[in-house]
Length: 68
Length: 141
Image (tube, rainbow over all chains, first blue to last red; front, side, top):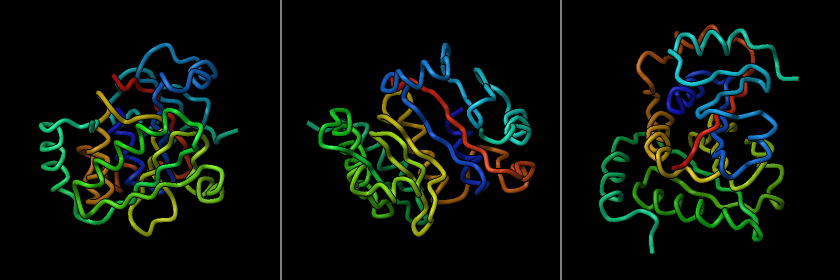
């Protein structure tokens, strides 16, 4: 999923990705209620769990509300 | 002792042979950040394996404006960008090691060549018309 997310960010200048090593940032793990890995959070609100097809991920990003 | 052993170093050098255009890695640290040393060390070992990789080490507080421009909000951080690019499409918070090391190397290739995950090109990502920030949580081992 990391490679997919990073490829999307490389292809679309509107997208940025932060890859977070969960073990190093327990505060973020708590704030975003990370229970499974990988977990993607889009604009701070939309969650994507586990592995999803590329088209589904792109659709979720496109439909995500702007960051609060 | 290096973080990358001889075998991993050889494989990493082979993978980085696919780099085409320069990629800049900007590492943000602080003296009191104990985890930062490993990120600096790993980035240095990787950067030494290809002339297409540039590595800058920045103090997170002294270079606060640059960190903000690249979207870096916490350390240790490694911001990846094409040479000359103002933004950093990808940032790593923490050490891109273990299971994540392969994806990290492939991300460098994507930024350098524009060739990414199969099926991901400008047309595929065109539906994304508003700024989007993705956080992806991973485990390094």
